[in-house]
Length: 408
Picture (cartoon, helix red, strand yellow):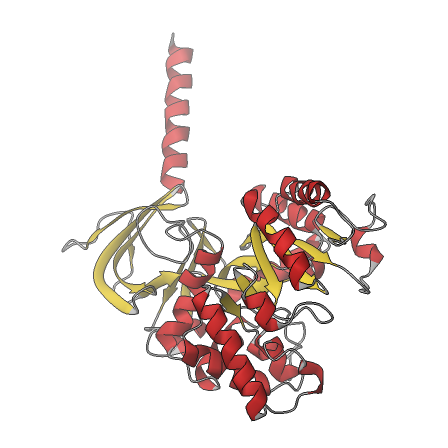
């Protein structure tokens, strides 16, 4: 009888310890509402099992077990809405490196825009098993057609001539609607939430493939211009939800140094179509500046003036800074470029990096916000980020999936 009682007591203690480990309370903080661009002071946030379960007015006294966040600003983790995680992180060492540099900049969610899904699956397993901490990854299937080359080694083991179900050369022109649907479902089975329509598809081909994608609840994301296929104005009217790269809105970006009046008139028409059709722009300004395409800044200004919604996405990692080693995450530099070079207000940039990123993933209310029921991916800052983006460079505490992690 004593053995049973002792065993039961130990079980209860273990459960109580686990329960305590999965709880976190931030006392008397300032919540940064990135949806409405305001600060809500004097709130206590209760986190349990990775989610925000309650937000209440702070009491007059700090209770045992609560973390004093008086004077701190709590905002949602950042979302990089354009990255190629599956390509940059082919093994555990590179995945851990990527995770560290992303968490250091406060990025807790990534939209992968074309890469090896096997690598992403491995990474997600490592995170699930507690081998490493890192951001959430949502990924898509990568489709191209026509004369386009990709490194076959990235898709080794596929039955599709070195292409995998999540990434393939797929000719819509030479396929029946049944074959398109089969390919869509194969990609969905790998966990892809949508498609990156990369290159060379014509307006007619887009008109066939996009409705089939959406029929099965999949997202349609595309390059702003399809090179030898649909132009930016065609893509804007095709039914896609997101168009990538501001520098492509003028179509012939490779020979452009500055925008002519005719180009500006055309880009304005593209932006008007995007606004009318509620198409979101993934501008990738920093990669444009690193590749001598400064005109992307002017295009972004035109898009913003037209009222086109936008995201914060990087597309790649930055080269090492002077005197440093290793590649860098470009999210903060992208946000600074949108503000400093494109003239967009800080609240708008913060919204794009949180709420906007969540919306295109259909994760509004779950990601990119500090509200009851949301995932507890939180940045505790020393200063108000709505006043200066420099506040993001001084993260006091990083919380991912409800757990405090080492941001270094």
